[in-house]
Amino acid sequence: MYLSHPVRRMRDDPIPGETATLVVELGDRDAEDFRGAVGDLGGTVEAELPFDSYRVALPEEAVSALCDLNGLAVVETVDAVGYGGDAGEDVEQGDPE
Image 1 (cartoon, rainbow, N blue to C red):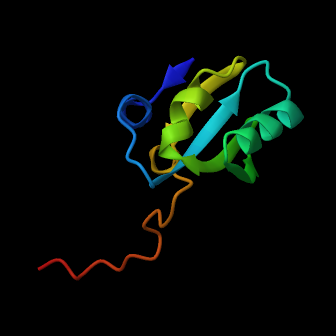
Image 2 (cartoon, one colour; image 1 turned 90 degrees about the horizontal axis):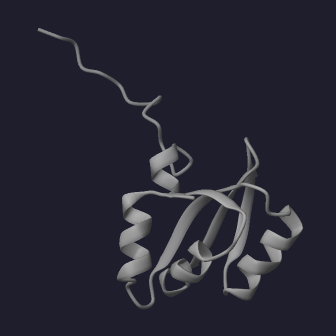
Protein backbone atom coordinates (compact mmCIF):
# COMPACT_ATOMS: atom_id res chain seq x y z
CA MET A 1 0.00 0.00 0.00
CA TYR A 2 1.18 3.51 -0.80
CA LEU A 3 1.04 6.12 1.97
CA SER A 4 1.83 9.74 1.17
CA HIS A 5 4.44 11.47 3.34
CA PRO A 6 1.86 13.58 5.23
CA VAL A 7 -0.18 10.45 5.99
CA ARG A 8 2.93 8.72 7.35
CA ARG A 9 3.59 11.72 9.59
CA MET A 10 -0.01 11.66 10.88
CA ARG A 11 0.24 7.92 11.44
CA ASP A 12 3.48 8.21 13.39
CA ASP A 13 2.81 11.46 15.26
CA PRO A 14 -0.90 12.34 15.33
CA ILE A 15 -2.07 15.64 16.74
CA PRO A 16 -4.72 15.00 19.41
CA GLY A 17 -8.05 16.60 18.61
CA GLU A 18 -7.24 17.18 14.92
CA THR A 19 -9.23 15.69 12.06
CA ALA A 20 -7.56 14.17 9.02
CA THR A 21 -9.31 14.33 5.66
CA LEU A 22 -7.92 11.64 3.41
CA VAL A 23 -8.52 10.00 0.06
CA VAL A 24 -8.37 6.22 0.24
CA GLU A 25 -8.21 4.06 -2.87
CA LEU A 26 -9.44 0.55 -2.26
CA GLY A 27 -7.44 -2.38 -3.47
CA ASP A 28 -9.29 -5.64 -2.92
CA ARG A 29 -11.30 -4.47 0.13
CA ASP A 30 -15.09 -4.49 -0.14
CA ALA A 31 -16.54 -0.95 -0.17
CA GLU A 32 -19.27 -1.65 2.41
CA ASP A 33 -16.76 -3.30 4.73
CA PHE A 34 -14.50 -0.27 4.30
CA ARG A 35 -17.32 2.12 5.20
CA GLY A 36 -18.02 0.09 8.35
CA ALA A 37 -14.35 0.06 9.33
CA VAL A 38 -14.09 3.85 8.94
CA GLY A 39 -17.15 4.24 11.18
CA ASP A 40 -15.62 1.89 13.75
CA LEU A 41 -12.57 4.20 13.82
CA GLY A 42 -14.73 7.22 14.62
CA GLY A 43 -14.67 8.55 11.09
CA THR A 44 -17.06 9.16 8.24
CA VAL A 45 -16.98 8.49 4.52
CA GLU A 46 -17.74 11.92 3.07
CA ALA A 47 -17.79 11.10 -0.64
CA GLU A 48 -17.35 8.36 -3.18
CA LEU A 49 -14.74 9.46 -5.73
CA PRO A 50 -13.56 8.13 -9.09
CA PHE A 51 -11.28 5.11 -9.34
CA ASP A 52 -12.78 3.18 -6.41
CA SER A 53 -11.66 5.90 -3.99
CA TYR A 54 -13.34 7.56 -1.02
CA ARG A 55 -12.87 10.84 0.86
CA VAL A 56 -12.89 10.13 4.58
CA ALA A 57 -12.59 12.27 7.69
CA LEU A 58 -11.40 10.76 10.95
CA PRO A 59 -9.42 11.72 14.05
CA GLU A 60 -5.68 11.87 13.39
CA GLU A 61 -5.27 9.40 16.25
CA ALA A 62 -7.12 6.84 14.06
CA VAL A 63 -4.91 7.24 10.97
CA SER A 64 -2.57 4.47 12.13
CA ALA A 65 -5.46 2.02 12.51
CA LEU A 66 -6.81 3.03 9.09
CA CYS A 67 -3.41 2.35 7.55
CA ASP A 68 -3.41 -1.09 9.19
CA LEU A 69 -6.59 -2.12 7.36
CA ASN A 70 -6.09 -4.86 4.80
CA GLY A 71 -7.06 -4.36 1.18
CA LEU A 72 -6.25 -0.68 0.71
CA ALA A 73 -4.11 0.46 -2.23
CA VAL A 74 -3.42 4.16 -1.51
CA VAL A 75 -3.93 6.60 1.38
CA GLU A 76 -3.21 10.27 0.68
CA THR A 77 -4.27 13.61 2.06
CA VAL A 78 -7.19 15.14 0.23
CA ASP A 79 -5.06 18.09 -0.91
CA ALA A 80 -2.46 15.80 -2.50
CA VAL A 81 -4.94 14.49 -5.04
CA GLY A 82 -6.85 17.69 -5.75
CA TYR A 83 -10.13 16.94 -3.96
CA GLY A 84 -9.56 19.43 -1.18
CA GLY A 85 -10.54 22.80 -2.50
CA ASP A 86 -9.88 25.46 -5.06
CA ALA A 87 -7.75 24.23 -7.94
CA GLY A 88 -7.11 27.79 -9.06
CA GLU A 89 -9.64 28.02 -11.90
CA ASP A 90 -11.13 31.22 -10.52
CA VAL A 91 -7.83 33.01 -9.93
CA GLU A 92 -7.50 36.16 -11.98
CA GLN A 93 -4.10 36.98 -13.36
CA GLY A 94 -2.88 40.55 -13.48
CA ASP A 95 -1.87 42.10 -16.79
CA PRO A 96 1.79 41.38 -17.51
CA GLU A 97 3.73 44.57 -17.95
